[in-house]
Image 1 (cartoon, rainbow over the protein chains, first blue to last red):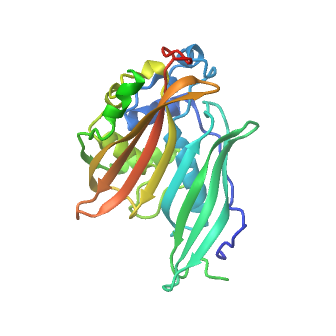
Image 2: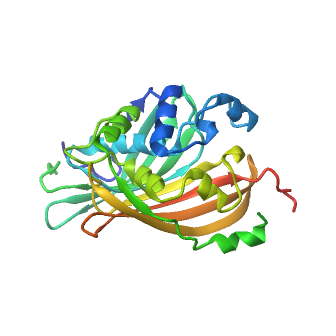
Length: 143
Length: 149
């Protein structure tokens, strides 16, 4: 794999496994009793929609999965996002990004700066942000 | 909580605690998020949020109670910034600490009046090295507050 250049798109990552039972399992992991993740009736009552709302940190996790496409030994150093809209159970999401900067370090490693996002397929943008990923020396050093 | 009282919450420390990234739970998280799993003994990056939030010594209800909010208000995460100083390791135990950094009352087109509660949480590994800084904000709708007030 060649090292990405500024302006290069990152590979997209698609996920169709956002199901109510997965939200319930994640609520246990997160120790998060917020009923908007568990009960569609609450979501309706709050005027947020008609299906359980996916946990925000899961949406960030999908972006991290997309960044893993930069290489098995790539290390995420920073991932910062702003949530723009809810993702609901049953939605299909696609994470993507664009390289905005690359710093080649003296030791042969490279830091990649990216704009990142998560879209709901057939819908709008759920989050957007920035990431910094370290590619170690020898990883994708084709350029 | 009245708007004038919000500033008194800034600086409130979290009780803190210890959090160990359990291998089986890490595998569950990787599965729930659809993988791929990180290499070797690295935890999924989502643990930057999970370990700090769960290990901070406050439950969700406790955090909301700082500003007299509840889950019935429909709180949501507004922003999340994960600054990894080193990869998070499965099986590692981290000390968690942090504090409230800001609370401001705002008004949004869709949700009306809301409070934006921000806090910073940190993970320190067993060697005493800072492993992660997590800053985040929560959106807390205030349906009981008059928008014109």
